[in-house]
Image (tube, rainbow, N blue to C red; front, side, top):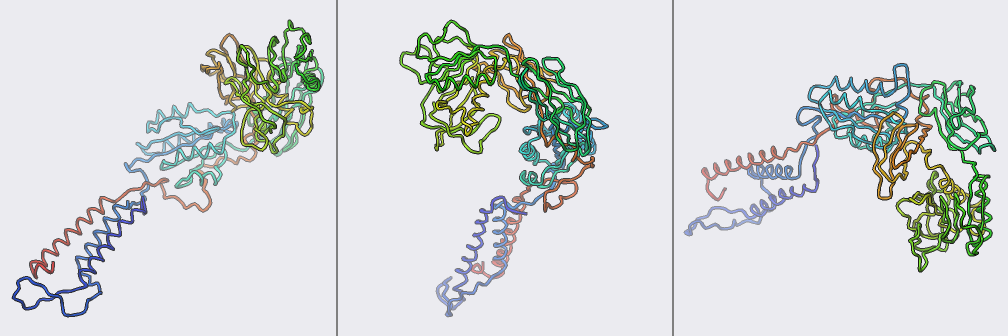
Length: 626
């Protein structure tokens, strides 16, 4: 029992007003005296009385006012179950990668689906079910319904993904389901008690464990090395508590470069060298041994191209030209680098076409190149006929790098030199961010994207005084190398992790084919880019605008891939938060039922009783006693 709005208890002050009225009325009592003046009343020849003398009408009025005050305050009772007699149920499913773990009777999700059908079959006719899922985010699989055939169709359409289940998504799914009378959670691990508490549930969900402990091997990482120069390496991890045999096959460009079996020690990692690969391109590693989870048994990487390419480095500073040429040759030793001063008229042959042009503190007008990297781009000049590709809005005397793609927030910001503030066009994406040293402003420090004219990159900070080769500023060098690699990467092949937002320009409507064969059409934005989120490991094909792009999605997560700690399935095991009171049998959610109408009826009855008492008193005694 409680009040919807405790502030409404101020209505109970009406009882205090009633007491004050009685004190005032009864403090100077009157008596009958002989008098020739009809109906005249005289004060009693006694001292004023301050004692409150209570009678039956007072108690009736006090009870009536109290009932009205509680009705206005919103008195309610906690009533378990649904108001219409039919209960609502929520079925919450984990769609993380671990639900694809294979067992003797199928996958863990097959067991969860069968358990959900048993829960639906045992429920009384008329009860409705809502199906909520979570992995990277929470979502509803359909509107709540009591149609059993529709529920079975929804269950048949659910499929686990190759991403790790996000704790925040689990919390959101429980919040979405908390209006139901009962909540059933189907996952391979119970929900952490803190998440159940944060969801604000009236009772803990009934947990149905799906899957069992299984041995699993995973490819943690794949480094293709440098073609014809250095070995590649694959890192294999054994998640079981006993030695595992592993058969590993690695191909490059469709040709096998490694195929062998070995034993991985319990709970250990093994580095497997291979190669060197012959040419740049796609490198694929695959575990052929059957284990608990298939999604982490394949991994893709892109070996850098070693084909001869012409690169142009323009800078008014000879030290910058030398540093940039060294970085280019470290990325690809077969680069044919031309370094020149843009202020000299005949420093290079302007009729040549370059694969990459690195333009430091200059415009690069008249340079023919497939890809351009603007370093410390110059502000717009008076008389420019065409707007710059990377418009400069301002500058700072010193900048600091705070975030970098693939790493996130840096533990210690990297202090850089002068930097330009660039307004990124919509077709470019920042690969590192920061701001002015000691300030709170934020802007992109490195970025890359593809326009119709070709690939374009940007490094906003100045690289003079050998800044990129400073060992204390390693993050600046890694951001620059990552940007250069994006510019020279093949445009028809991409390697991305599952769950990431993939953005690629196609400049037309495109058809996306997922690894499971499903298709959907993507519409580009105003800059010609399409976006999608790969949720399955494997190859995606994007066809549109006269081009075909292959996107390879890698999956690995230590928590989801570790199947050794999953206990045997337990029927309807309940996950309870600490100190949680047991819920009433057959009910999991309460409803607030107000009783204002009942209280108002009681108050009206009390007023009627008081009227009867006063009428009888007036008939028996006199009007002044009423």
